[in-house]
Length: 441
Image (cartoon, rainbow, N blue to C red; front, side, top):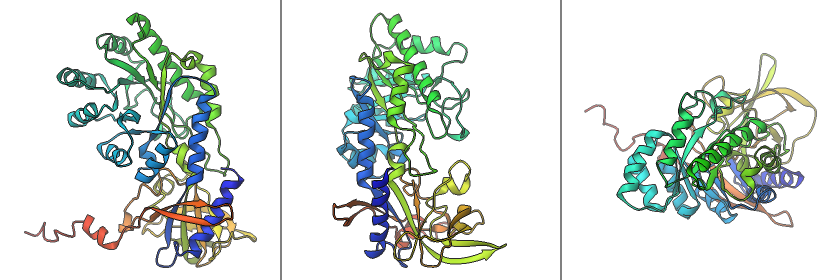
């Protein structure tokens, strides 16, 4: 995020207060910077265009921000989608994403999900050899336009966050290539199925270094070359290399970049980019994270054990990962006054707490900030992916409204509703409110 993006964010915070988007009645909202999202999509496409003339489908990982307007915006910017559930596929279809720009990945696809994908012509990456057996029967029963592939696990190792590391020796994803006999089994699976024309791997995620990501892709490329050689033709014509570019949560700087990763791929596996293979990528967090911001009002301030605490309306319901694993998912806290202007002044070590009824509901602990006051606004940037779009209904806290914003040349900010705030009636309805006597007979 450059200086212009942080400038847009400051204007949006002020406008959120001035226009009543954030208020005592609506004390927490989420914002998405439309221009920033478009800029990230452009950076991704240009980075790969700089290293290859091959056809590349950049499929946004819907799980990162499962919001129909976001998917429509990214499609307008030239991207497709990667889906991993019936719900995500439904969102993609609602956004108007065509089947040719949709990829289905999931380790637990049902026969019904596979039949739907094949009927629509959506690309499918099987997760394991049992799923290939299931596809055998489906492909034989009805013609399909779906490109079909298999996910392999190169087992190159973990990053710094074990729960997100997909290429470990015991990962649940894909066929583990280094297990005894597995590689030969994968090669034979392709030779037995001429319709199997794609190969998929995914090593990257938050905490995974670029070199490890590139190593995983290089292993998949080498396997594709081996299969094509043994087949005596280019059976595999597309490599789906996944995504997982890490995000810098420590500052507004966007690092690492797509361009750095693309150049590393060119150095690691130059044959991957020589035009013989079509490519698919599946980036998610890196496209959206930097362009989302949670805004919350400070309701109260207090002191405990000599440390000031600002109690806000944003906590575990919008920043679940940070609250439960703060060392792996630290977030910046940006202070603004009650009118939405950046708060300056001497800094004080303080905690920033959320509204949930457990002690660990903290956005930040021992953070040096200008002293916060009731009515101030706390902005939590870098939350455009896997944060406010993934509501955690602790204490039946309502889902906040999500609003996209644009900034005109004169600084005027225009908001558009992406997802309206959840009402109390909706909370009751989702909690079985229509069946209050269901358990009492």
